[in-house]
Amino acid sequence: MNYQRPKGTNDILPGESEKWQFVEETARLLFGDYQYHEIRTPMFEHYEVVARSVGDTTDIVSKEMYDFYDKGKRHVTLRPEGTAPIVRSYIENKLYGPEYVKPYKVYYSGPMFRYERPQKGRLRQFHQIGVEAFGSENPATDVETMIMAMEFFKQLGLHQIRLVINSLGDKETRQAYRQALIDYLTPFEAQLSDDSKRRLHENPLRVLDSKDKRDKEVVKGAPSILDYLSEAAQNHFSEVTKMLDALEVSYEIDSNMVRGLDYYTHTIFEIMSDAPKMGAQSTICAGGRYDQLVEELGGPQTPGFGFAMGIERVLMIMEAEEAVLPDFDHLDAYVVNLGQETNVEALKIVQAIRNAGFSADRDVMNRKAKAQFKSADRQKAELVLTIGKEELEAGTVRVKHMATRQEVEFLLADVYEDFATVYDKMVKE
Picture 1 (cartoon, helix red, strand yellow):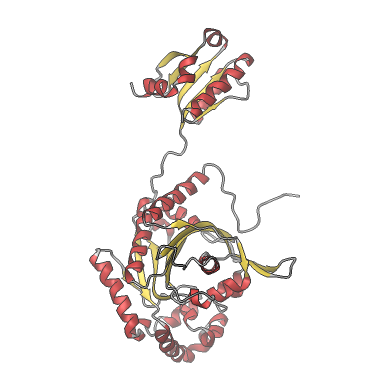
Picture 2 (cartoon, rainbow, N blue to C red; picture 1 turned 90 degrees about the horizontal axis):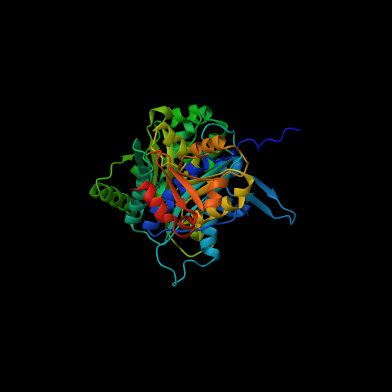
C-alpha cells in the first residue's frame, strides 16, 4: 500500500516551514504592539457552537464542516473558522469580567478544516491567523484593526493590496434590506442556482455572496444595503470613513460585499491583492464587526471586531509579489572532525559554541574532510573549525572564515572559555 497524505492537506517541509515561521512571527510581534495576546482553543468544538455562530444557511455549515458523533454520542466538528470557538471561550471563561482589560484583545494561529474541493489556495486543512477584540463599540476599533491588518502585509513586503469596506448595518437595517432584496430577487428566482433559490427566503444576503455565474449576473442590479442603513448604522459607517480619511488610508466601498458568515454587523472589510501573477482579484484577509454574537451564544451583550487570513494564501501572494524574505539558512559555525579519536572533542566544541549563544553543527557521518567542507558550504556556515589528530594532541583548533578564506589557529581552551571573542576576531577584525 502507498501511504499518502489525505486529499486536501499538505506536508510543510523544512525549507518551507521557515517561511511560515516568518509570517507567524511577524504577526506575533505586530499584534503584540497593539496589545493583542495569544489564545489557543481546541481544534474541535461542539457542533452547535459553530452552527449557531456561523449560520445554518452558510456553505460552511450546510456543506463543508467535518462533523461527526464521537464515542459518547456527542455531535462535534473540527473547527472551520476561528471566531466561534473564541467567542465560546470568552463566555465560558468569563473574560468579560471586571478584572480584565477592556477591550479584551486576542490573536490566534492554527489549522482549520473544511470539506471542499481542493484547489489552488483552498485546502481541506488550511491555516489561519486572526484577531478578535471584545467590548468596544467605538468605530476607532474598526479602523485601527483594519490598519493593523494592512500594516501586517506591508511588513511582509506586500504592496499591491487594497482595502475594501462596506456596512451591513444593525438589526433594523438588515430587516429593511432583507425585504428589499427579496422583492428584487423574486422575479429572477427561476434563473438562480439551486442554493440561491433555497437561500432566497431563508437568508437572502447569502445570495449576494454566491460564486455561481448566474447568481453573480442577477445580483449586479441588486439594491445597495447602504441605502437602507438606519440612522445609527449610517453614523457608525460615516465615522469609520471619516477616521480612515483623517489617517489618509486609501479604501474602496463595495456595497455588494457581504462576507460568508452570518454573524457580521456594521463594518466589514476585505484586503485584496492585485498581484498580476495571482490572476483574478484575490482576497487575502477579511473580517468585520459582530455585535450580537456573544449574546447569541449566551454571554452578556458584548460588541466585537476581528479578522482572519489564510497563511497558505498569504504565502502565495508573497511569492507572486516576489517579497524579499530573511536568510533562513545561516549557520555560525561548523566543526570538521578528522579521525575517530576526535569524535568526543568535536562534540565538546560544538556544545561549547551553542552554549555561547551561537548556532553550530558538526559531522557525525565519519566523512572525509572534502565531504565535510561541502556540507559546511551547503549549510552556509560562516566559520569552519577543523580538528584532527595533530590539533587534538596540540590542544588547538583551526578556524576558517569562509567568506574571506582566512584561517587562524586557536587554543581549544579559548573556544571553550570564550567563543564569542574567537568569533569576533574572525568575523569583525
